[in-house]
Length: 88
Image 1 (cartoon, rainbow, N blue to C red):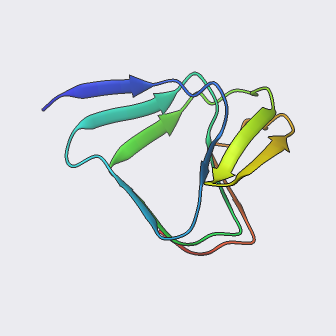
Image 2: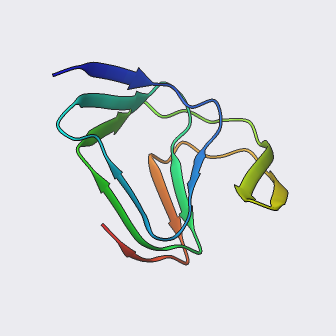
């Protein structure tokens, strides 16, 4: 089994109908930003650890193929869920 530590510089925005599954690997998201599900549905997160999440700067993000927006600074939540449904 392999290990991987992921440090996000900005929050990871997860949209609808997504699965994040590390397939038995030892994966940690730490020492950076967390994960945000906003206006999404049917999102599955499985098999990884999230810890030591810190405030992260905002900035330009792409949340769709044809959309670029501005995000304010994120808080220190590991996973933020806003107006989303069916999150596992």
